[in-house]
Image: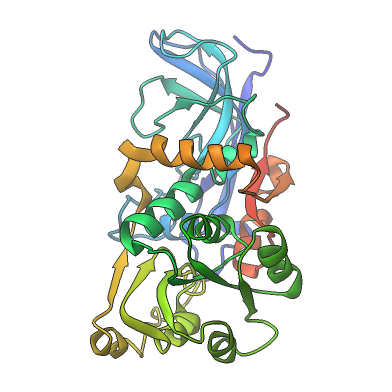
Length: 342
């Protein structure tokens, strides 16, 4: 079936308190079994590391069930089919889906949790299928367009602007004729957002006051805010929103590792005063329309009017420390873990 006889996996050993630590993971090795009819064996090439993974590690009701103790850590990824007893996928097909943090995935080709679909490695480098052409891109596209409903000439502000979702939000907004202001941490990230991605401005929250930056770069207020961080930055933006503003709640990375209750927005009354709307979004709700977003953004890429940046870390063993990069602001672009050569 394959030259490899075993499969290394990262399993959740304990529910983290605060930032995940090494003891929260257990590395296991298990033999690869033979395939049953209708099954495939997928070799993991790249894994997507996302802030949402921290939430999946917590017990409690959410939009998706938590990862169970001793279960392989959930992660989306790109892999190659190396053995098949299914008519759906052939050996050599490159697929995207829920591979988990492991070297191989084995199971039914039509497994609804994995939800594999083919990708074309000739159309774009594979890490881009985990960025703008994957879940982060779908999140940005539908969150902005369906919930934000931007109109040409409006001002859009996006936090985490240099990250996987933020970089796509800003570029989609520019394509729709909006003024776009990012919020990111550090001069290099802000320069990238403006000079490479084409944002109109970027506020460095590490180098100055976000409140002052919003006054300077959003003199006419904020019509749409795409929030990836929560906390103080969300609170500050709420003081600058316009009448009928739309706030998209995508994530709250500043709060994910709290050991105290999540900090809610103290300036929420601005929503009432400005008749504004704040709405959460989960990307899975738009699964039947992913192809629409992918087609439009792929077209922009071919035209040279849309760029992405991936931060690739090499080696499955690097998973625990690579995941922490998301919460320490160390990644620059979409964080991807390379598990094997493609």
